[in-house]
Every structure is written in structure tokens, then in C-alpha cells.
Image (cartoon, rainbow, N blue to C red; front, side, top):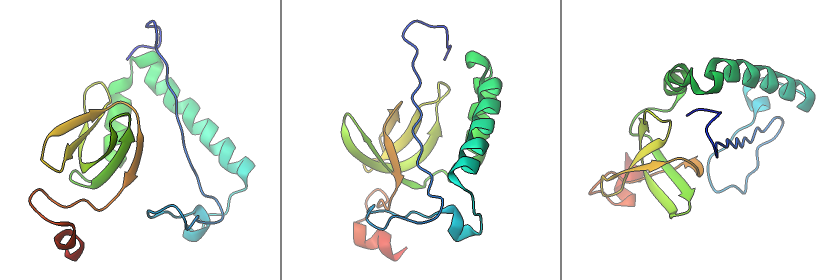
Length: 140
């Protein structure tokens, strides 16, 4: 991934709940206040902008992508964690496999086929293991 390549675009979306947790999301969520961290919107934005600047410098127009990928994987959920991705194919549920060398999210769908996502809305979910029913997965 090189910033100078023709057609290169990056869009980053983030939701950060500071003081309260929306209940109508349909999936688990939290807020920083629930974990003892009270930040004003300005403080949160300042922190995020400083961190984003540092990571953009590490990324260095794509030359430092390997370091960014490594750091992301160190902080990511466990391999096998259930995910749901909403992209142009519609919702796909599966289990986290990792990031490929180009940074695409890799998940194994319910049939065990690995799928690659370069964009989409990703959420944690409960996904049955291959061959299991939803009820069996909820008991685990």
C-alpha cells in the first residue's frame, strides 16, 4: 500500500463512547467512563489526533506498513474470535483468521472458507463453529 499510487484512498471510521453506552446497538458495547476513564470530547480528540499522527508517521506512506500490521495483530482479538462483516456482499459471519500481507481482514466463514475484506463494518458476534448450531455455540 503506497500513498502515492494513483487511486489510493483511506477512510477511517471510529466510534468512541465516552460517557454512556448505547443500548439499542444489537451487540455488546461499552464506554470509557464504565472503565474509570473520564475524558471530555476535546481531551479524547486531542489524544486520538496525537496517536493517529504517530501511527501515520510509522506507516510512512506505506513503507512502514509491516510495523503497523504487526502492532495491530498484537492488539487484535484472538484468532478464532467470532466476527460479522457487513460489506457489499451483505453480512458475512465467521471467525477471525488474521490480516493478510496487504492489510485485508481475513475471516473463515461458517463453511470454513477464508474470505478477504478490505472494507466493511466489523462487529463481534457469536458464530457457531463449523458443524455446530447456534444453540450449541451459546452453551460454550
